[in-house]
Image 1 (cartoon, rainbow, N blue to C red):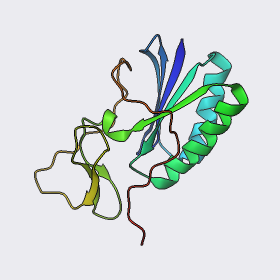
Image 2: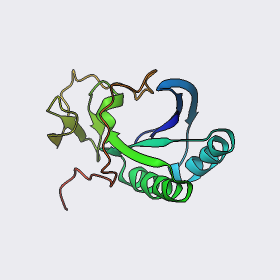
Image 3: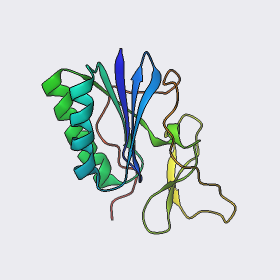
Image 4: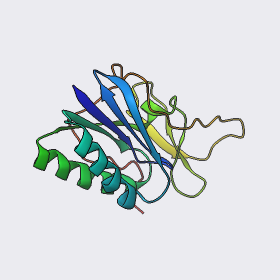
Length: 154
């Protein structure tokens, strides 16, 4: 079983290819999601027969989430590949995620994105980079793949 995990909510864009839930290949690219994602996926689809695509649908860069969703949903439908979504907090040790200006998304619930607030950070707050896990067994995925927007209306 071959699966792909896409983390597009920050830079660099991270894509991992997994065989039997274990990481076998990493793609790490700087640039716009709209430019990079199709190029990398062309390589992946030429080389692998995927069963599932996972992507981060909250919180983070809204444009990256939207672009990823539309692109991956299209691939999912046309290639008959299952699409699932998950929270970005799964991949950065549950640390705050950049929101808007000097504000950050902060997960106040250990259930990974059940209670996300937007606020300024304390001086001592540690921010962890996003990382592709070596194994994707313990990640909480959802079949509800629409982007989740955590910012209040302006």
